[in-house]
Image (cartoon, rainbow, N blue to C red; front, side):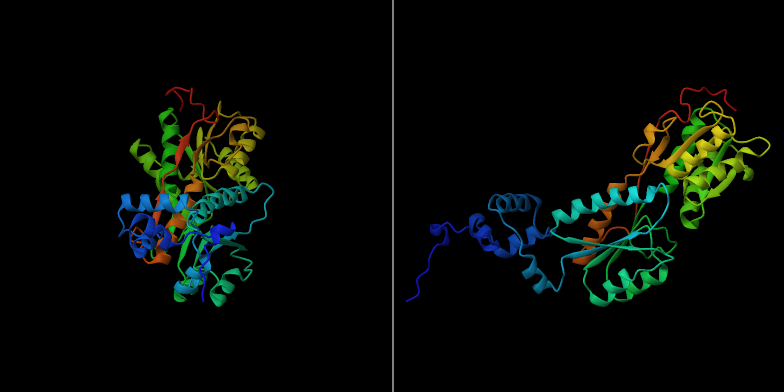
Length: 355
């Protein structure tokens, strides 16, 4: 004879199942399952009720079983850029963007596997993902070559780029709205009365072009002609920002304000201005872009256009999960709007008599 024993009588705590939740709510198990997978076919009210009961019953999804049924690993590959600089703003950027990715991954019960790559020094991390199929999708932060991207696409591995600037509009990507950022920074200088405004960009073509367009647009709206002598480039680090600013300082009539496409180069530029015997913002106003931590503690505190870095990570993983589930129908390219943070490096107290 077979005896059915209730485990709770022996103090054994059983994990709630989808069937248990369905029974409590008098719903079909399939409806509960769709709600827990956030399917749009279940109404918001019903989904919220199911999620509430599931949480109160201590429901935990069986990821192993889900993987066996769906053929998925419940794993996301995250590829980060390798950089070696003394003060590495990219490392700070990566840590913040990863926090945003973690938030979404945790809520969706996905694991994250991290690897590092460089355009110059390939570690093989992406190749291993392709060969082993050990990730349902891939997020690539800052670094990817077009041939690697093509390999992922050919092998039907969903991929979303974060802060990668390509002319390839077929890629799924989440970036900062760099054009808007440069526009906001330049417009702020114009609003203070500055009319001679320099621009320090970076060698990365697609990114720099977007920033230049925002800078040019702001000048055009104020009917100010662009001076080619006011344009300089660095490679993104402190030293190149210093050198680029020195180049601008040595022209006959240097600009009185300058917009710089990242905070790290902006700090280098401020040092160059001081070493040249001038002051910030008394002689030259400086606006950066990134909004990296600690910028308010420099002398002077840096006015900057803040990139919503954590939001880049959150939005990118939400997009990737939609691609994995096959229900993503949004834009391939999403640009997150930055915001201006006003501090003392651009002399916001100056009036319109500045030339």
